[in-house]
Length: 439
Image (cartoon, rainbow, N blue to C red; front, side, top):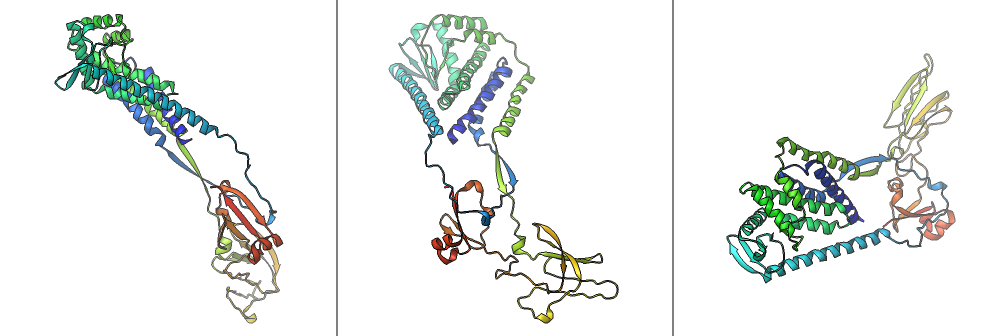
């Protein structure tokens, strides 16, 4: 799956560079800049899938009331469906292997042709004379030609042409585009891209040749070579190709203005939009669950005659009676407290308990002491927690169920009452929640 996503995203970048080049740069005469633009497109296409923008979104974690659940077991369907993504991946990989094999066969034919010819080193280049009916071509420092197919003057120009290809390392461009087509064989823009790179390299060398040679003679040579149908290898830079008309048109085209090179920057906003649309990864995180009921003492406010006192860290009761009969009683939470120290209130007051979950105002006639509801864990909750088991492991009593992400849960088993005791013994007397997460 990840490999197919990589191919799809890199294919998108190749399509963007192809469209940008075809619409804005195809008719411009800065061929060297065009070469680097097209090469950059290949490298950007390979890096683009790894440029990820991470966006974090906080969501409310659903709270599950386990006391209302019955004994249920949710299992995934045992029927295995066909994994179509795997089928597509295998088919695509088979296509890659096919085109890779064809590319390797072309390289093997190339080296076989070179080995059969007569090689002569001239400077840093190897001149290889062959007898096969093939167009002259260069491959790195090898320049291959059939001398019987050309006159001496033609051969001099052709060799000069191929030396420029070799000097500027154009074979690297051709190898990269062939490997791109192997990787993206199902992408029509990849094959179009390879053709654009090849044509631009010919424009680049043609422009360099006519700067030192008569333009008309060179054009006649191109036309003459187009009359003869000669075989060539696509992996090489050949002197003759079927786009002779376009090459002659570009030779006679006026030089582009320097400002036109800024058109290359138009691909940048295209890439930015592609990153935002396709490479933005949204990560959902649960909001922190408030544990104020467990870890903090509730806040109690007692009101009479418009006087209010709020206390956060301990339970304090402040009573104000009307007029001169004022009496203040403070009750602090302690482990042990005598009856004499406990305050009794005879009036009726409205008191408010705020615990960050809900707020309630309750009228109470204070005829008995206000006592703390305190558990052995220093908590103000009196409900007993069920035994929680996650993937076969018993969780501690402090384990927070709300931290589990529902999407990661495969199934939940709820055991209550006698069924829980029968299965898990005495430790299951408060109920058991058995959770299995997805692997």
